[in-house]
Length: 69
Image 1 (tube, rainbow, N blue to C red):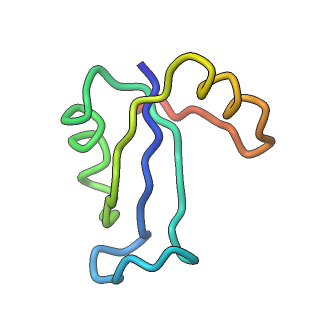
Image 2 (image 1 turned 90 degrees about the vertical axis):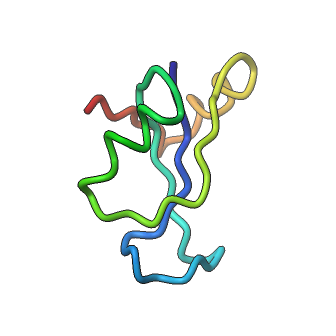
């Protein structure tokens, strides 16, 4: 499954919409995704499963790249 992760680059950063970054990651569950990213020091705001029409829409974006950790 593919998940979209909204995050801040540093754990100490306060979540601000303008500084929020996103990435796509392959994982089995939300817990699996959070575990894979735990060593990177991200302040994870939200993890969302991406499927169906939403996934097709995201694939059209030039910044769409799926990480496999």
